Amino acid sequence: MENIAILCGGNSDEKIISIDSAQNIYENIDKNKYNAFKIIHRDNLIFEVLHNKKKIQVKNNDFSFLIDNNKYRIDKVFMMIHGDPGENGNLCDFFDDLNIPYTNSNKEISNITFDKYLCNTLLKKKGFDVPSSFIYSDDCKINFPCIIKPTSSGSSLGISKVNHTNEVSSALEKAKKSGNKIMIEEFLEGREFTCAVFRSKKKIISLPITEIISFNDFFDYDAKYNNKSLEVTPAKIPKSIAKNIKSLSKEIYAKLSMRGIVRIDYILHNKKPFIIEINTVPGFSKKSIVPQMLKSENIKISDFISEQLDELDSN
Image 1 (cartoon, one colour):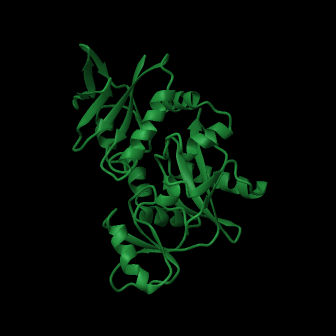
Image 2 (cartoon, rainbow, N blue to C red):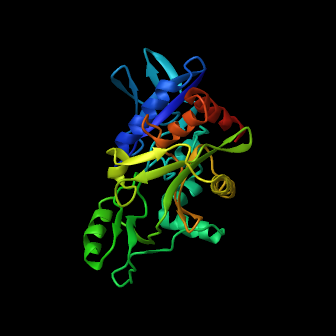
């Protein structure tokens, strides 16, 4: 059987969410097909296997470890690190050097998509609709309302909707807690949707669209994780709009040469979907959106996991 690392942890504020995502993968992976191991990234390429309440050091020269005097070398990595150093691509070189395939996109695309400003710039260059944005500086002119957020953070951490000049200072301080580079983004009024896509047998597949209805001003961290939002799957929207969003998501996935499961978030503004974020390692906890989409499509999580791991053989 193949030895699979379900990689979690990392250095970001999303560490706990990452561990929850990895646990859900671990509980649902086909144990008759794979030897699955939860491996946590601590810091500076320090990895530990979580096994029977023990922490076992992983050897970096071949990504192997000993359990009861048996040596296991990892064959494939199911990436569940949200943020640094997984989702942003900083581990790609490490695994590429060891010839160990991983389920997320390559280093270049991961780096770009994790930086929201670079991602917006690239998408706009390729002809996709995105909100206007720029990097904050002391002398910049801000139009209200707007979104102030760090360019590189997940789970809507550090993000504020700002309506007046006197709110800018506190929004900047909040953003700086989650990242050093801050962007100002046009606020677009509209319904929020998200679409997940992945490759299966060389074909790009889209899952049912989810509508995100926040009880707050927008879908912030509080709304995501403190039951202050509704996630409706499948979204109740006209077939033409759903078809457009799915088609856009597949096109983005293909043009950016992405891998694994990717979730793309949209604001439907004046009947046009604007891309607001690309998640290359979306959450997979029991409360996360992608498992809801799989359930809506009657896809067993275990089958989906196997499909994602088998897909690595064709990359």
